[in-house]
Image: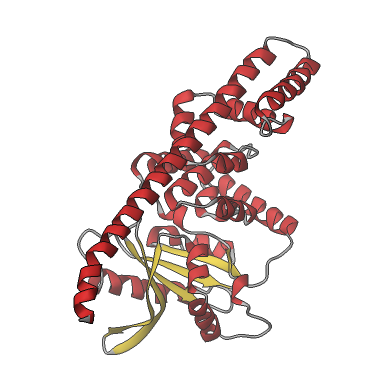
Length: 346
């Protein structure tokens, strides 16, 4: 009798689930549509005010227009039209003057996302956050965290010439294709592992697995975990890859090695064995060549450049278990970017 009752209830449960799904999906579409329309309204308002203000050369005139309009709109429509909001609308229209680009942007990002990237003066940096936000579906909170962690400055692409950055961003925007330089960072922030004082490579590896979700967030959401201590056999000798991931957008296996000390030349040779074995025995049709990421406590840039690792598919990056003061980090990353761009003649 119980099984019969369950069978009778099953279609009803399925019906309820299907209807719920339809309602939720419709609500999401409506919310997205309303949000896009609202963002377009803010842009249109900003453009119209900018046109008005530009017609008068007096700086004070713009302030008067904004203050008066804010008071009038608040009286008619209530909250939501403060002087700050109107100024952000004007800022939005100045930053993105082309309507078609704005229309597409508003369909993909919320007004809260847009407001976060408006203060970024560097166009390439701003476009990087916009494209990564779209491709990885970042929430507003995640976008803020990525910006606070200086993700752009830590990403390998930021050290390339501006023309290369623009080409890679356009490729990501138009075709959804990502280059390895956009996928790898330096340094990686591993402060969430809670490692203190002395620890071993095994301790780091175990902590990474215990905090795998947060580790993948730091790596990038396209990384998928495959194996720990992946055993490979070469000429009857066994080797073990610390961590093996797969990057969906790059369509590549990614071997990760964790090192306690500074990067050494022998680490390259070790990784080359791993990558060649993976290419021969693990890579399937349609996948690109495997990549390697060596995470070290430190590295000498001159040594990394001398070994020409860029041509081997091996990336070397530092990891930080304790975050330095932001000012110190900014100074260090700015110096790294400047040095790299000088090397490329940018």
